[in-house]
Amino acid sequence: MVFSSIAFLCLFFPVVFLLHLVIPNKMVRNAILIVASIFFYAYGEPVYVILLLASVLMNYLLGLGISKTKSKCILGAAVVINLLLLVVFKYAGFLAESVNLFLPTNYALPVPKLSLPIGISFYTFQALSYVIDVYRGQVPVQKNFFKLLLYVSFFPQLIAGPIVKYHDIEKEIDEREVTYEGVKSGLFRFSAGLGKKVLIANTMAYIADRMFALSNSEFGLLSGWIGAIAYLLQIYFDFSGYSDMAIGLGRLFGFHFLENFNYPYISGSIQEFWRRWHISLSTWFKDYLYIPLGGNRKGKSRTVVNKYIVFLATGIWHGANWTFLIWGLYHGTLQMLESANIIPVKKNFKLFNHLYTLLAVTVGFVIFRADNLLQAGYVIKAMFGFGNNGGAGYVGAMAMLSAYHITIFVIAVFATTPIWRMLCEKAEKKPWSAVVLDYGKAIGCLLVLVLTLMSLASDSYNPFIYFRF
Image (tube, rainbow, N blue to C red; front, side):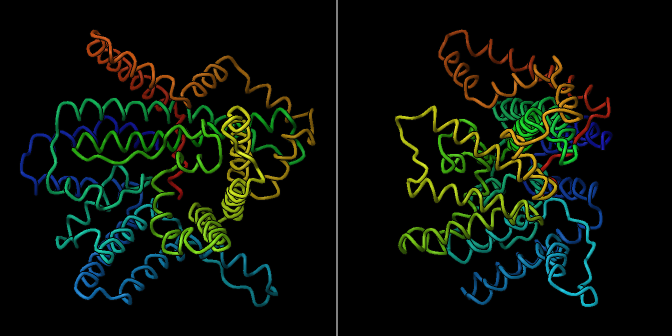
């Protein structure tokens, strides 16, 4: 995996980019990106390339059928078949194990042992959004199979998002420009994401993994909080780092993906958090689940039910484990409590709102990260002073408080805020800003690349969290 990461940085991406840059023909450019994307996916999942191609072909044919007939039956078939793919490959084992809890041993269901295709949740949702939008008349049907294949399989965002809607890049599949400014901003954005992942997220992962590897009886106040905060930072910099890399790579090839994160940890409520966190997923569920269910148009009771369904689906989307399901319901409940003013979120109490939201999100991510609900309970209990405040947990936690880890933590906390962005925006108004900022960013890119290669070469690679979703 370390070799594959270095190979991508130093060989695969530069070759694909240069070929795309020097060949002006649009059809050939698209063909290059399709071949590169299939190769990229096959490098990690050679068997499931067939599944990816079959999914695109199926949705291509269903889209053609819907455009001709406007048939709800075909639309229903598209929804069922796409979701069935997810159920079979992602949830079959979990469902069988859950049912077996209530069955006698002699009648237990066989538990499927299918490996999870990388990125299946992302590319399935993209293909499904295309079919639904064709039915709604919001996009014209794509009659060229290979253009639809490029949309679904484009390698920068294929395996971990952001979830791109067809209408957002429809025109750029046919007409796009590779410009100096686009390449420059793309490289800066890619480097920022790379640094987030390798230099910050991987460091926080090292801490979080060791804390969550403790036995339940060893969790204490210090180990609980260090593990929880480390994972809070790990998942943000891991996932937003990948999104930055995908957005940056997209710009290099002339595509413009929408933002997926907007400083979620500065939020003053759980509702605001979900407007800033994994924006492409929350928008997808809003457009294709919440609004079709009736949204907030059918009374307060129905609104509550609809929101719970959305958050239940959000939890289930993330994985086949009760921890994800409870995490989704937990966030849904907090939103309900805020809407009912049981948890008051007042404009005059910004500090309280921020601290409450940060605490609630941190506790939620403990549930998300835990191996099971029992472990989550022990960690949360320890965080509030009801754990083992000595022994191996305390010793392990103290070992994580090295100068290096604390330095990365301080940098990470700073980077969760828009302070740097605001400083750059302020500096851009100065007459000397263009040259100085460009040189500064260029030096920063080189520094990040060198440190990243050194880190990867030291065998400290840690897979992206959202690869398994």
